[in-house]
Image 1: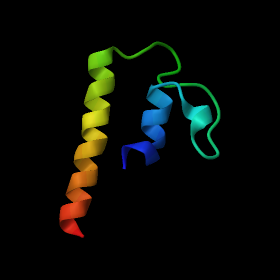
Image 2: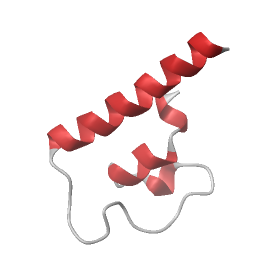
Image 3: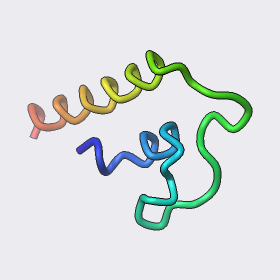
Length: 55
């Protein structure tokens, strides 16, 4: 599930809201465009769908 992806928490700079989360957002030296963030969100969601089909 998207809400379980620590990567997404980090790129949205919300890592402190994740269980056990800490540190700074990603990328550390810069920022992602909204389109790049969407790409990661879609990638994570796509992977979740692949697992659901395989299981």
